[in-house]
Image 1 (tube, helix red, strand yellow):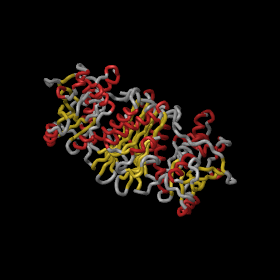
Image 2 (tube, rainbow over the protein chains, first blue to last red):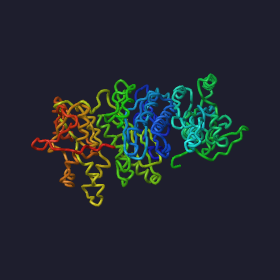
Image 3 (tube, one colour):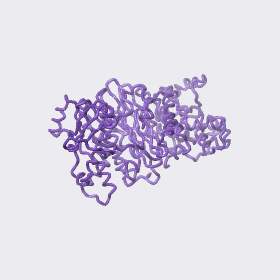
Image 4 (cartoon, rainbow over the protein chains, first blue to last red):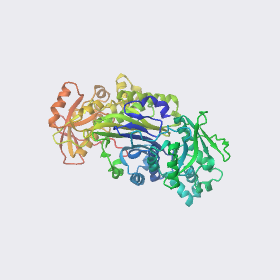
Length: 318
Length: 318
């Protein structure tokens, strides 16, 4: 929506990559680019009203760090705009919230450089600033026909975590892990840095695999086929929803894993990293020529037959 | 509030000036600093629910540009986080809103480099990025005993504009000007750039003169006396509230003028600019040694007697 209504406003000085990717790139010196991303979380839309201050804080920061990971950027600084209803504007809630911010900020060595607190409905808006050597960042555009598609970690954890929150009575040791995956999804910053110069395209999975791989395809002018059997899904997610976990893996948002493509020349490197357990990623599909712009991502069953899919990833106001 | 709860999080690499001023300073290259400021506007708190999309947009951008002006920074890029209730998420409202963003962005030659749109209560959060030569930006700290206090433009326009909005039936040609001053306060970016190397301290007046000059005093470890007779107030503001305009000038927020201090060595330069009409500013007071940290700013009447003041500038949750 931002891209549609504001596309005329990004052409000015120093902007190397405008809106429409996970972050924008700004030329700040001949060798370095500033990487800028913004994400807003609203109570009742992006987290339930039962979430604690710390849970909201860690999730907000992790979501924004994930954008840096998708760009192959080193996160450095962030601003925080916190809108808070009067009933939560007390020292106890704020101490809990700031503990969450502090935990993630220290873990990723990023500095808070500004922000404000206003009174109103609970909303957290973060702008993250990172750095990347000029021309080395990862982007959505760049996937070529024949490239291999990978995802990091496991898929469906975010959707399963959200399910665990809404059925609070069924919490057990398994769903503790999933709750944590929802509120503090681990941003794959290290992997993003490692993929510089290796991946031909990259995105973080916030809207669901189908939607986000679709964004890579759209930006790159290609299509993709993925193999259902090869989708990495954690055992506890399969157990939680034996009939439904594939849907979570394909369409469930909030995983904050990376989906990336690799050309033939770099494929052996990535496969070696995976076999040595230096890189937690799975090969899930292949990039093909695009023939139908309304159907960019095809899911294949074990006999290589297309599976009908009709639910697109979550789109605000979509 | 941000400064109190998050003060431990600003010490990391490259941060030259952390939270607590109008913006933060980051060292991005040996000669340049990145200047970062964030401001959030919430419906019902920072603008009335009758405001149009364009009015909200221009006000949000101007408020953030004013932070750049206060730092003597050249604004360059911004991110926009727009939270929008479903009833306003239509093309008409968004076209109006984006027209406001475009108007101000083009006027100040700044580029939109990121942002997102989420569903929820109407909130606009902007992070503005600017540049300043290393060590040349203006800050709150730096005012010295004997320095002269100036303000740009006129005071009380913001409060009078807000009053005009709430008494809609009394709109006339005068209050048209005040409405415009509320929704599109002119950020004093040019003056901020001119004051680099001239002003000893600077702030923009968003919380009211008494509160914001108090911030300069607190950061600089000094006090200030201002002369009520010398406060610049526009004729239409005096006419609108003959008994009350001094209160608006002292405590009314939302003026977005600059308040700055000038040492003896630069005073002749500034006075010459003013006399040649190259600088729209008024001399309103003097910096003194601080004796009482609870009473940093004293207002004097025409006989140099202190006037009792008891209403502090607006403080969220204060």
